[in-house]
Image (cartoon, rainbow, N blue to C red; front, side, top):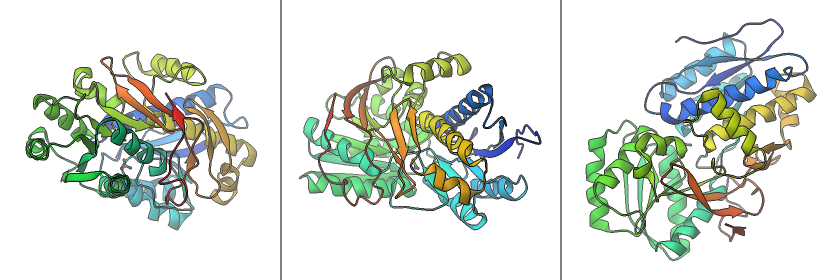
Length: 383
Ligand code: ACM
């Protein structure tokens, strides 16, 4: 597997694992860009304590087992302790045994199903209390009580649907269907799904389909003549990147809950979006997964500046509690859980492939990955 490395003796060497090929490249390639942009910014400003950050980048090709092998290569052969990477929960789970055994630190910038803690992972994507809880309430209030679940067949969709199912039922709703397709699903594999949806006639579809499957699913929905105003697809993973790939007309009217959308006005986002466009092209939208991939490198650099050491046992205590003005707003790393305290937003895709924000939390929402306290309650917010 070819790697890109920039070897300099005094550099801070870090590993980067996002897929540039395979069915997850549509989103993971953007996370690679967010990571590299942050590294370039830090290096342009003089590095960390005068030393450049040098990424060693491998392409795991969307295969979880390859993530595990490459994580081991990074730690054993390349002598790296810090790894930025992973989108799917299956790839995270393939890397965790490696970083736990060799005492590395995986920075994971993707929303996931929660109910996990590893001392060797910093989780900077949303947990269910930061997206699913408020999305469920919004859908019940605006579209109706009959939900249909469609997911890719692996851990995140199955667990995320279990949580969403609990939320729906606790609030008087009903799950009228639940179906899964392979992560390698092709366009034709969504025809039976469309037939099941037509037969069940739900008020809303909750999709946990990821990667290329997202594009095929939304296109099959549009071809079937369904109307997003009446029965939208709601998701936690359909970002500006997937909408761009499926076509703006196909995505229009569908709903996503995320910490970040490109349309956030002001704050750090204005500069972030313009730097991203300058670096990768005006047609390349930012998205929630890019943003987490980007800010987590800055959080890492901030902690490293204080420790001047990449030793996990020295770095981790400095990371916990770190605050950072991210493009989504001020975030921090929760000391109790290694997860980030993040903003909650809901967006509706418009015809320009961007999200009109219809809900925003009043502040960053403390991460509660086990849904212990904040999980089921009301969350204050505004449009
Ligand atoms: C995911 O697999 N955590 C989206």
